[in-house]
Length: 259
Image 1: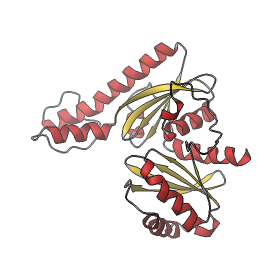
Image 2: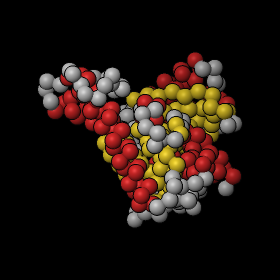
Image 3: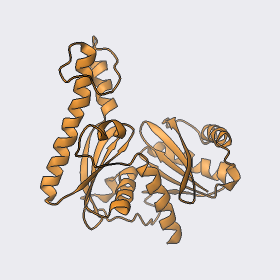
């Protein structure tokens, strides 16, 4: 079995694969101060609850956008699973990422974005826009040759809403959901409309400009925490891939084992 770890700015996702089958996945809030033993004790418990024996996990792979967490996740793999952690984007390793990186400074690309580009290209094999609804809302562009050629980074939905609520003392805390109508007749309705339809406008506007600039037909797919909400909101998003990153990590691990 394979342990897959996706360490994002908000959550760390752990998943276990048995071959190509996803057995289970869990998430814990990201905290760069969390130790390998804290991860280990928690993960041992959730594995036991899922009926997965720790001893049968023989490999581990990580994509992280939180550099401070990498050391303890390496220690987690060594101490609790007796294996070396394969870290995507580690400059010390010559990894086969499966995609060419055609931007000004390839080292700037986040490991998660590289994994998403690889996973999307593997599935669809055509020009793509991958929209990831995470702490940031990112648009990653993959060419017809399968190269990562750039993208767009915008504030995430939750981040924008949090900033709005903190900056305006009288505004309440609201849930992110589709409002009953666009014109809000109360503060909560107006805020929900702004965050929901505002991001639909952002998605359609940016993706439309990317398509026009690229000059060819492109498939648009969505992943990340709020992808299911926004994928239903606009016909521009053609496919929902909620587990794109962890499946991409599984396939990248296999690719590098074969290498």
